Length: 292
Image (cartoon, rainbow, N blue to C red; front, side, top):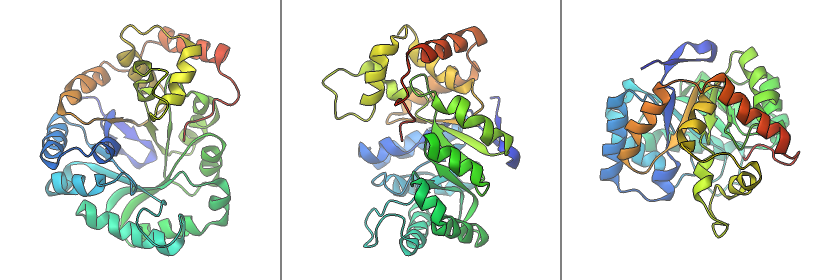
């Protein structure tokens, strides 16, 4: 497998990583999670991404692969209260939440903690950043980062305090490609692409209004991309951007080998990338901002 370098930090990461939202929200049984995550590691996938609010995702990951902790990079996100009495972004809550995440994940440290889509105003107040810096100084995390989109993501990058950025990058969400990614790369940040296949929105219908990828489906109706082999083309489009790793969700072990096979083909050819970019430039409206 051809690994990628995670910003200036020198980590060698697999081109795709495992996204832990689905195993939490879809309540995937622990036995299935054990098989999935150990199979992913055996295939060479070495980035696992989760969050405090993905139901039991952190716990399931900890139970499945904490015994192989030295083999992978572990990312989690913090900020939404998710069971604590204090409100979102409260510094006291954040400190307790970080410790809870470590306990759930069965580790004494993660490799990256990201603020989970807080507002620019919250960033400007600075307390949440201080909490992450404290955690880094205490050895609870190796790096700190921001997860979010659009102008707030740009602001977070420009602050110069974060080691990494997680943002939406896909054929239906291209705002960051010009506005944010060049700044992040210039600062040597590790860049994590979330939603790299646009939540496979082309498989949804007009009736799926409560599905997470529905806003992408609405955009897709106007973009009218050719659907033949689109999953592969979409993933390779995202991998053609200046990202370190693309986080792909899964709830079945059957997805890992085909997804990795696609990633190992490398970036989409320049001409095909430009076709997606051109179509976006022709159709996208100003309110088609990053899908936080």
